[in-house]
Amino acid sequence: MAAKPAAGESKVAKAAETTRQVAAPPALKVVGGEAAVVQPAQPKAITPPPLLKPAPKPMPLKIVEGSAEGPGFEVGDHVVYPTHGVGKITAIETQEIAGHILKVFVVQFEKDRMTLRVPVGKVRAAGLRRLSTRKEMDLALAKLRGRSRVKRTMWSRRAQEYEAKINSGDPASIAEVVRDLHRNAGQPDQSYSERQIYQAALDRLARELAAVERIDEDQATQRLEKMLQAAA
Image (cartoon, rainbow, N blue to C red; front, side, top):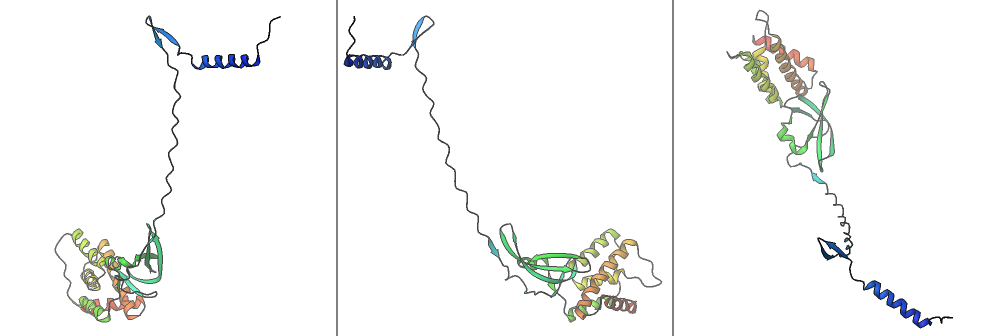
């Protein structure tokens, strides 16, 4: 009966076997008649995920008052916007636009059923102004008593000049358009486009006259028409 190996010898044998496995040479592979050493595959390096950048803080809102350019309009004031005529300031609001806080005048045009919001700092650039004084309006009405001055040019060119005068918002220029396009009885009738421009100029002038004199717009229109007939 064979003797069992001692416990110490068994441990030594296992340690030697482990050493042989660890120290085993790399495998050989025959390539083209020659032996080549095959290196074991190296594990791929693990790339750590990129660090997340903190979200940028929102930019603080910039307050733009523009009071240095504003003429100091108040709620309830009647004003004149060049391309729309007489309107009324119904509110002064603060709005956020493109990261800026703007103070705006809310101008309502009752007859046209339209509302505009004009930034306080852009009042002068937009041409928003106060009503004409009585003296300025009297100078404008004096234009109605003069003689018509119609240029001998193509109507399309004259129409552009008339529209530019109306959109200027200047009552004296608007009065010139009313004077030049007015027709009394016995004079040649107006064309359709002439009547349109004439009526637009007459309405624009009558609205400001009514606001200045604090009368009804129909009364202001009748007053203008009487002045035109008297000057004929």
